[in-house]
Amino acid sequence: MSQESHGSNAMWTWLAPAAASILLFAKFAGLVDVSSGIALALSAALLGGAVFASVHHAEVLALRLGEPFGSILLALAVTVIEVALIVSIMVSGAEGSDQVARDTVFSAVMIVLNGVVGLCLIFGGQRHYEQSFRLDGASAALAVLGTLATLALVLPNYTLAISGPEYSPVQLIFIGAVSLALYLVFVFVQTIRHRDYFLDATEPELASDQAAPGKPTTSTAAASAGLLLVSLAAVVLLAKILSYPLDAAITSAGLPKTFVGVVIATVVLLPEGIASIRAALFNRLQNSINLALGSALASIGLTIPAVAVVSLITGSKLTLGLIPESIVLLVLTLFVSTLTLGTGRTTVLQGAIHLVIFATFLLLSAIP
Image (cartoon, rainbow, N blue to C red; front, side, top):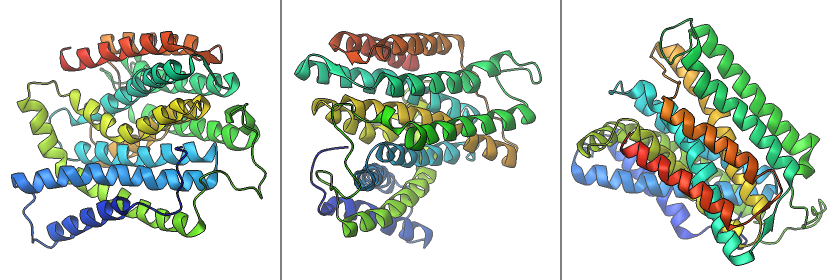
């Protein structure tokens, strides 16, 4: 979390969800034609504002709750936004809609483990030379992440019940259930059983009657709770409005359909990525690692069960298996991440390696 004071919410954090709500009311009342260019541009701008506002209010609540609960709340808020964008495209029936969940989850993992982590290590290492974090928590999160990624994105290519990179309904139910169960077990370990694994070893945990620096007041936290719900609802509804235009824009730009997943993941992870980088600059790499790995875990552990339920209810096709080049990048990312997070200390070198992998991911996303 940022170290700024949160005595009150900035004006824009109220205005963004309010403006989005007004536009949505006008749309559903038939007062605005959202298919026009101006309305679409305004919808896109308000969607971005609602995303940033929702993550801001989640951050305020996270500061009130303290670590590691704060990182979990941020990850949940981001995942709700991600699921909303994915489902809006899935139910639209557009070409490639069956692959958008796979592409978004894979993009989220690559953006987090390579883009966000790489930038955190580069900026943090440039300012502080060498940074440290708790090895126990990072290795536990990475083990869960590797298992979930393999089950959700690699194994479907090798099952025989249905031809193609898909799970049968029974298999999909099982994978969705175990993904959710494993994520919940991780959250239990992170918040209760071994909470100390995810706390900065250089900063002792505050007693319950002590106030953390910059801790929001009760009224500010209560206001953020309400505004968070409004912001998330605005994101869900605006995402549905923009699903068709986004697909059309990707096509007109000559980019592959899989690039839709990159755009969705970038939109929802941008605010959290900024928070992670800022934490690294303040020499709080533990917080950066919690945010990064937590969002990647939530992206798989919560998104896959959600889209599985939508697929089973609507009877829509759900393609989860990655293509070979993506599997290579995923394996390389998990291997390098194991080395990077396997010592408890990082430098700019590890950050540079992750950014090279991230650049390669972006290139292959645009030019497969």
